[in-house]
Length: 133
Image 1 (cartoon, one colour):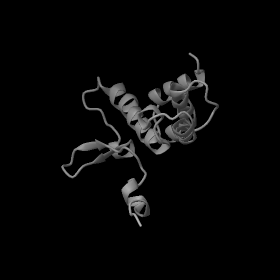
Image 2 (cartoon, one colour):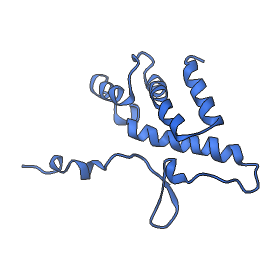
Image 3 (cartoon, rainbow, N blue to C red):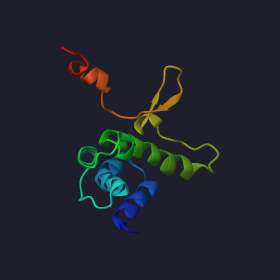
Image 4 (cartoon, rainbow, N blue to C red):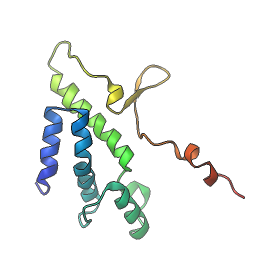
């Protein structure tokens, strides 16, 4: 009730989930998540809030918001489960979109696993940070 815009976005995503709606909702969802971690924060995205909270408030990584790329994938999974799966759970043979478009990926064993982030793994992206000398 404290952030009506977020409530409206969540309702909209639940009723008619589309990739465009998710993309348009991300700024509102980011601010909502930032407010959950620190109600005194000015309106900013989760990456800026992470940096500030980690640096100035000396919070551990477990006590700061997720990175933006991670939050986007999580949001896609939630919208897929709520807007597609649960909304059709009483249908005998629901036709669902591919989970690969909604924050999931197939593993080598052909089972669906969460896609945690679209960013490259830090150890692969930052090789120069892993070598001493």
